[in-house]
Length: 152
Image (cartoon, rainbow, N blue to C red; front, side, top):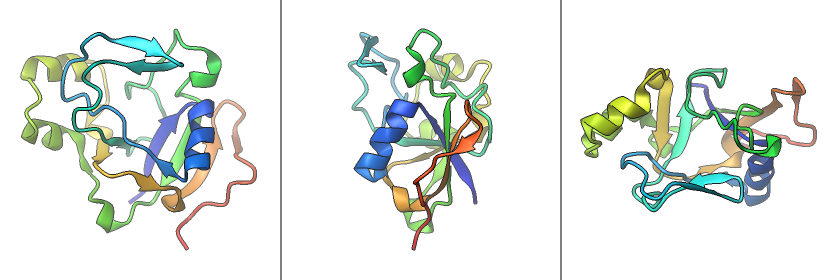
């Protein structure tokens, strides 16, 4: 199965440096005290069951990664990581996972409105960069030079 992770150029550099895709808010809880810090949306509920977000969709539109008020280096429409996750990562569809973890129906309805949420997947664990096969700069329409991905 091929999945994708969309991110900003700045976050892509951090992923390469850290050697993994880190977990971010699962959105199981409605954000409390939402704000932007260092180009990232944060809230007081972010630490509740964090996940790595993935999608089966090769384009970033209607995925919830729109960040129009952020500087260009934090635009999550810019970079697409292509991932071939191994079975041990236990990748699962977001919706049944969210339902089984108690997302409120009202918050879920607001979160998925006008989104292609049926393409959303999550991993509860971080994903080693070895499972990223390609990194594409969608603005420049080029593969990131110098990144040699893929599990050995």
